Image 1: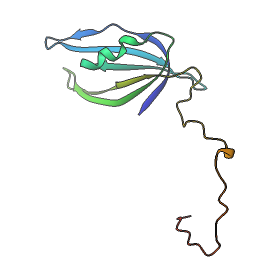
Image 2: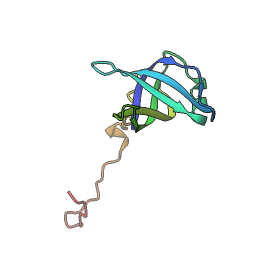
Image 3: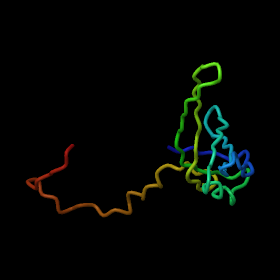
Length: 124
């Protein structure tokens, strides 16, 4: 899955727990009709991927959705979700991230040597 938008915030790398677990957060604002501010976290060695990115840049982030279960001291089960990034790419201004533009029709030679009795194996 991917998230695309403009960087609103890049956090500092945080070290959590005694095991040295590292995480770093980035907030991306989508360019939808109703823009969303999406928090994406990068963990361990992936935190360094954010070093070359700044607020205002248009990016595409490859993500995984993560979920976990936690039982509190009262015995109630709670569920938490996280969006975890594993790749980030810079996009050009105005780039939709979709298909590249198609070549104009004039760039292709017409097929003049077709015969009506030639077998057509296309499935449609």
